[in-house]
Image (tube, rainbow, N blue to C red; front, side, top):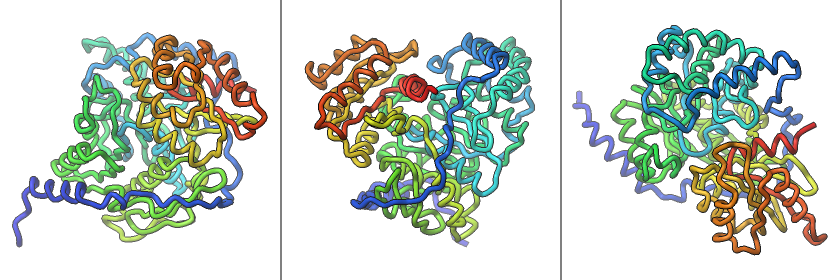
Length: 499
């Protein structure tokens, strides 16, 4: 019997394969013709509103108020000590089901939704935990593809509250908002019970509150610069934090990554004796064509090809998310390792055809078309700009932008500058929204003074953008894109979908 190879040699081989490969392998073949595809009846709005029952709405608001007294999601103490203590006193509900854990910079929520849809189509009961929410806090915890009811959310909070207070009394710092929500999700999943949980990290990976699960499948969506003050100043450093979700013996599904990030992730996988599948090598996109209402894909999974897959979402980045999601579900079912076969093709097609991703190039109005997109960093903005250019033939596009104060607002504006005729600068309702004057100054620097309009209130900004889009008859193909933050999108969605 031959001696086992040295892990460092394995790592070098994997890195060589990653960095020497032909980059054209990962390039999509974008079709130029429009295809009409039937995706079944359009689903209802996947984002819940406030409860209609006044008493239930009051109870939910009381829970939200109590949660708001805790550290917000931007204030962190990098450890899992408190959440681990809470899980312990709750009886470790997160160990009652297998999990798929998702990290990365962009695309996590859309990928989670696709994974959830695929698992549900194969008749598994799913729990999904994502953040932040677009409109309502209950969105963060889903069962069987739908947000839990306000009633169940309140009940879950009341169930875990005594244990939360017990841990609060023991620890130096009280549990944070995100830690309590994470515990609620894990408890709700165990109570359901679910067959599998799909869990998106809040930030990073190693010390993220979600990282008390031992997921058999770890998914890493594209890594780019974001939260650099907490995660590191390079994509390699950020990958080091995110690699913390890779557990011993797991399967790791890697989206396309910068070289330094790929090196870090692959090294971690070798150390954890994990199996790695890389987009563009073990799985990926074979072909992609723009279609009415989305795109038509041929995907190469871990077990073979899946053709005629209609995805009712726009943008190449969503096709990449779909490839990652498919590989993750195949890995969960043991395909590519234990089984050399594909999943049932018709079931996969049916699942993808029903996927929704609120706030991701979402059309909320026509005449003129108004799009919402939660891009909040330059990497996400570039992907959105490419998606808009490909899927919509706008003759004139007006941007409405409000960012969060800790983001690279200038970089985001620079990414949108080529596609925006004009930009309306505003502020969303979140206290962390970038000051309008500060954001306007950055916009003038990027766009020039003549292309910048300032409206401090978001309703006025949207109205101004629609007016600009409609002001000349020749711009019959004009549109509006509201973007810059998920909080901006949430506010706009409430305004534009009301009633």
